[in-house]
Length: 269
View 1 (cartoon, rainbow, N blue to C red):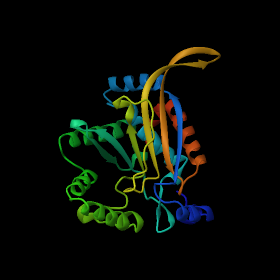
View 2: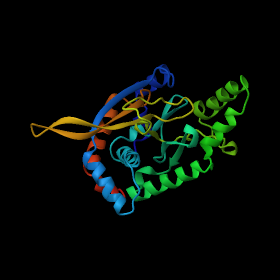
View 3: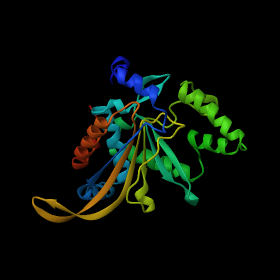
């Protein structure tokens, strides 16, 4: 991980001052990924008893990308300075009964294998769908129960204390790292081909990854047109802490690991 001194360049100090979160500090990027072979790999893993999905594998790949190539994505702004997180945690959006959206958090997502991460996410999703809420969901329920306009005042107070000042409130399940390092959401599961996520004003997340639908498209391979399964993945990045070049490095790692998913069967060295 980079030291605090290396992260807080002159530009980062200026960026953290002139940009407000998340109104005018967003970078967007997208890339089409060929997942034809990856889907075959997922089918093979399921036959071995590993209940994984494209969402789970991309979540793991992002954790590995942060660990290996772009630790700058595992940072946030606190009191005008860029801070490095102690670990890499992921938040995965899930669809709950009744069409409501929820989320599950996976700690140390960069250190898990495909089997370990898939089981942990699957278990947590099952608990969420049974009505067992995590801290983030409990906080959402608590906030929604407060009448307007008091709800707005409470949220502003929470954001000031936890996000701007970096002070945790564990007694009520609120802290400055509630959403972890990054968020993954599969909008393809609800029929959308592509889209861009928002940088939540109630979180310190520096990037959100959106997975679109898997669509059969004609592509050129070895000068021949063939039909492949393509998925668009898009990222929203916080320009206060990262630049477009960091997104480019991240997408390169994603492409590499998608072509070699067997690497994810082992713990990182």
